[in-house]
Length: 67
Image (cartoon, rainbow, N blue to C red; front, side):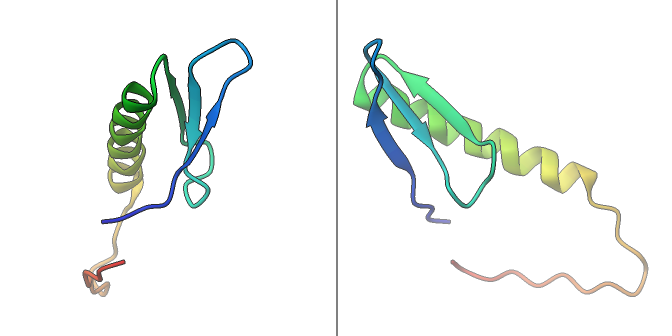
């Protein structure tokens, strides 16, 4: 899966990074690389909780798509 992230320098130093397509998925890091590594982890955790919250009925069909 490929997602677009927004990476911006923080006024206090370091970087803030967020995922526009995943509301509330935000992280930060002291360096650009650290911020990107942290947002990857935040994305994984964000998507994991969504999967756990889904309750399917017996008539539901699941289909995987690439984005």
